[in-house]
Structures are given as structure tokens and as C-alpha cells.
Length: 256
Image (tube, rainbow, N blue to C red; front, side):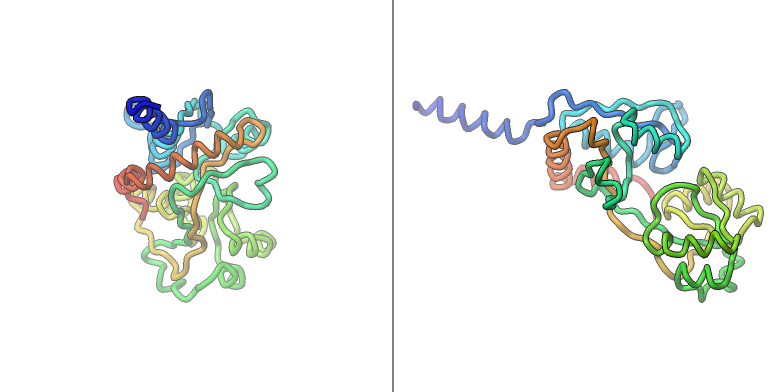
């Protein structure tokens, strides 16, 4: 083989390594109002940390992303199970979900905590676990659906049986319930609660423990995607992390 052909072959091999390897990969996700992760901006355009990260990853992987109209959380999860939606954002990889889903490499970390209002912190600062909250029968607000860690799941039966648990469908609703005194404590994603508290003028104070800190993933419907598409997405995440692209996106959002 001549020198020119050798160089050409090497160049093609390099391009094959760098180029997206999932032609025709098309994913769909339903819109939701979960700022700062997913929301409609001032121009009514989909925006947010998770959407921006997902768009960058999927573009790098050679996948398209279709954003469907907003759906309630329970309905969105059901449509994912049926395959009518092929992607969920910020998902936790659990054994129970493996039957229906493929999970990408982590693309950011989530933090779940319990908060009270600043004026009530002295009353609850010694509560150091979900079990302590359940034992003391303190009123707790928590999201109606979603995964918030083993500690919460283990305390959930006692919280429910005692009648101390009230649930909300959105962070906005939950913060209004906290401000109205429906309960003294609220559990949820740290970034989302801080964001909404600032909008509603509520001063939050965290209890002295973390319910969950864990990586989150893109969750792909197993029946609607292939292992090759997942490989391309994981390779895209690795490249974008190495380049600093994902870190730069995360740095633009205040999620603490």
C-alpha cells in the first residue's frame, strides 16, 4: 500500500472512531415543568440543565430528540413503560427498572434532602434520618411519584400509616404547601427545591443529613432502542466529559 493510501486509511479509521455510531437513532421525551432541569423559558421554548445536557449528548451520538407536550409524571412514566415515549431524563438505575430500560453512563449527580423553613430549623435540627422523622410523626411533604432513595422507601410505610405524609405533583405546588403550613418538612431534589424557594420567596434550611446523593442517567426504553445506540450514547458522554463540554453546561446552572 502506498504512503497516500496508508494515510487515507488511518484518517478514515480515526473518523470512524470519532463519528457517531448510531445512525437513525431517534428518541422522544415528554416535556415537564421541573426547573432548573426542564422547563419552558420566556419564549416558551424547552430549556433547562437536563435538556441541554441530553441535547449535547444525543447530538454527539448521532441521535435526534423529539420533545413531546407536557404530561403529568404518572402518565409520562406509564407511556414510557408502553414504549410511546423512549427517553426519561435524570433517571436512577435500579434492578426493578432493568427489565424495561437501558441506562446510560452517569451524566450528572442528584441530591435529595429534607428541608424546613428557616424559622423552624431549631425545632428539627436534631432529626438525623428519615426513620427519625417517621418516629417523631412530623408532617412531611414529598413528591407523589419518583425514586428518592432507599432510606425514603424504607420509611415510606410508616410515614403513610401515621398519616403524616402529604404528596405533591409539582415542586411549585409542594413549596406553596410548605409556605401555607400544610407540613413543616419537605423532601425533594435539592436543586429544584432551592430554585422554587427563591421564586416564591421562601427561605429554606436543610436538615442535617442527605437522603440521597447518586448519579443519574438517561433512561432508554429497552424495546425502542438497541444496545448499539446505548454504546454510541455512552461513548458520546465519555468524549464530552473529556472535552469539558458537560462540565461547562453543569456549571451554568445553580443546583445547590
